[in-house]
Length: 388
Image 1 (cartoon, one colour):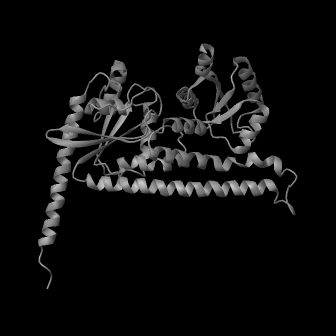
Image 2 (tube, one colour; image 1 turned 135 degrees about the vertical axis):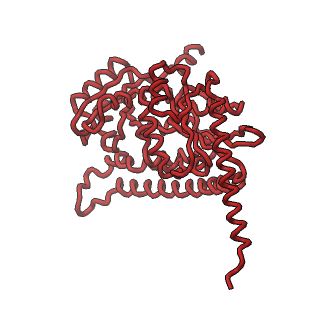
Image 3 (tube, one colour; image 1 turned 180 degrees about the vertical axis):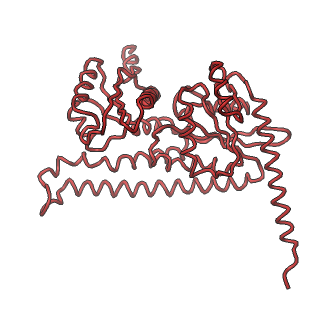
């Protein structure tokens, strides 16, 4: 019995493969590969070995060159690993070709790994719907390989409509229908969220955004005294969580959102827009950045690109660099010089919270001034005499 439990808890060993091209600088490719390792660990895998290949162009057949495929195969055998994860998206044919060259090995790409993590962490009905939509959208263009064996004899011309193609079209039609059904259910949830947003129009709302694992949930807990789920893993929070902060006699609503990440597929961003909708309705954006991260500038860029079509440029923002307790003096000085308007905090050690509350208070006062000015204009408009 004990041996069975130990076997059950054994982690799946994997090999990671990253690619550096002329468009992707080596240091960035290396950072992305390290992040892929963290994603693999979050999914419950153990990284046995990592490869980073520099190429001019991706191989249409296997993404990486044949020589590197053989090298990966040897590493899988030596490390007794049964899974290989690529840092770039694989097409259906590339997955099929790699599985033929690596028999008995599970082949995944970055998107597939992220979707697996999302599926494990989805808690509410909303996030489960969003994950299933994303999984189906990911699956559809990769269906071709499943039916190739049924229609190999049909290579064009008369008779090309073989049983495989018929089954493939049937599957695609069923998937499209399922996606439509899920989107309708999601729309109802979004409508309910819109209604809640309207009801909260009289309360100052702050949308908390940032790169995954920047400490947004820990910061929410520190500010509100709430018990939001916190874990030192990527995508520990998928659903938006809303809490109240009592400040100078007024309630402020804080809404935490799903964290962002590099190379997050477009359809995932689209799918999770309803969760990010709390940021779109916010009166102020709190941008949380891990100040200790070596590539914090990249994190900032990813956050801005993700939000550019969701949050209005006119919405005021407060930027905080979190995890100040593990930043050295050189990093703290660098952040202060390059981002003087930002607040350096430590949600874990309760550092900088008073400055952050003061920033909230300043934005709250501006919000009241804008509302009063708007109400005054509406009053003057309603009292203006009708033209004769």
